Length: 359
Image 1 (cartoon, rainbow, N blue to C red):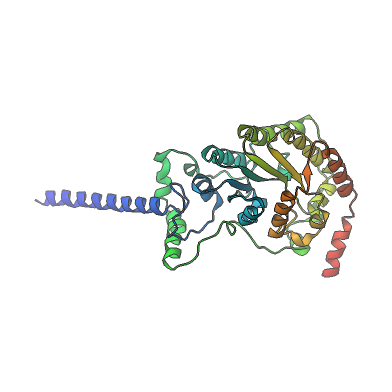
Image 2 (cartoon, helix red, strand yellow; image 1 turned 45 degrees about the vertical axis):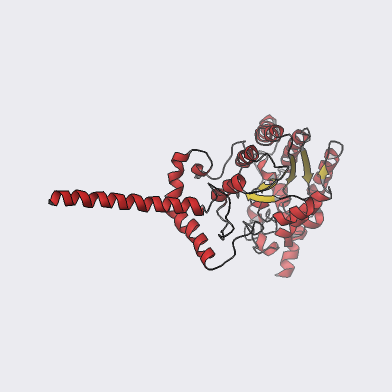
């Protein structure tokens, strides 16, 4: 009798455990904080964060015909501004610290699933041109969210971290009537800007000449392979989609570092190589804003030597809408020479004399 009671107790425990696991899994699938199974429900308030967990869900299940993507240089774009200027229905999917391959692969998944995408706005990191095509900063990746394999979804539906930091905040915010994160707010930042703040991360005194300053066959191979495999092959695969690409306009302090290292010619030759490849793609419009000196040379727009505030993102949208900074076959060499002349002969010391006065 005792043995039967023990077996019954054991079966009941297993049943209770299975019911609890089923309840947790069902709740996770229904709430779906990272949109792995479905798009957002109007009665939930979603907290959009953790880009590499949520971006595939956004690109998989949201309703859109335009995509804004890039690294942290794309975080401060407001899709509503793009919609107003271009008549689109845009979503934003930035990947902070991403290499070209990561961005390309995520765009490929998005475009293969959503045949309605007409426009892609892509912030092409200027300093990534001379990285290997498969360069990546992050090794740890939630691959189970990016494939169509239902069996590895256990890593999602039974993930304690996603339960606490994903599902519960959605339920709590919804219960208390808090507004969810808007697409404009998603990944945007309002960090301090200005020269004094830039100098907290830009150690100018310790910038030394680079050992290799040439642009030879190896550098040409790197740029060619990086651009071909990650951009050209992708845009050629989707000829009906218009790609609006722009080189990210870093601050004058970035150019100062190139000057101090002696790598400005190498970097601009990488730009030339990439530009010549991209201009051959009929569905690419390429933009270069290094000639917008009133922005590049104004450190009040920058959080460090590269990252600009949302004001610059808004300007970029307007510039593209007005076709300002457009690079074409008949002007790219002239633009490149002007760029080299301006940044090669700039009085960089004057930047820091200004800092001394403010201090």
